[in-house]
Length: 215
Image (cartoon, rainbow, N blue to C red; front, side, top):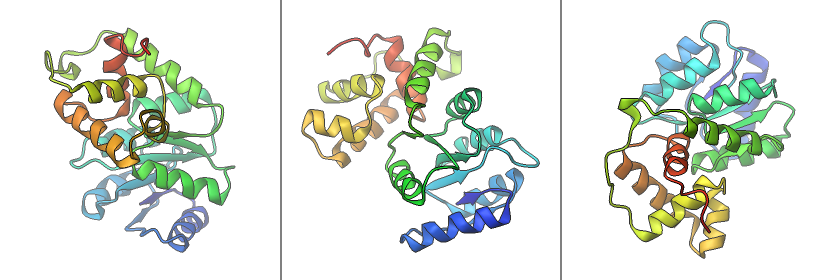
């Protein structure tokens, strides 16, 4: 699903995705329309602009994250401002790409977002990891705490530790000599056991428990 208030840009992105063999199930020109259409569209990935005329993109992202099942969100914005990136991350976005990216970079970003890999315009990944750490230093609200003593396997804990260090799923797969799909499955199982919803919450959980400091 492509959400952007500029018709020419929206249509161009949808066309590029379609030409690459992806199925665009819906488009929307404003935030309200995006939130309204998302449940029926059941998109796996939402390519979302931040600068929308009614609802801010970060609020759209929050509302999408509250849906069940929630899509993965790739922000595609003209802004590379750190504040915008961090707000997008806190709202649950999987990735953030600036509109100066090439067509190939966009297609790669959408594919990676679809499988749960975080993808950020070069130079922003370190900023985002720093935000994960800052969030972990804040007291967790009562409704966001994970259940006590969840039973993770040794492999799930190992994958979680590498996620907390900021490695992509592909990098984790290479390091542990696993398939990309196996790493995805471990992450999804861990999210379910911890009753968490996205990578931001998962990294916060891991850092709070010191899992980002080990080997």
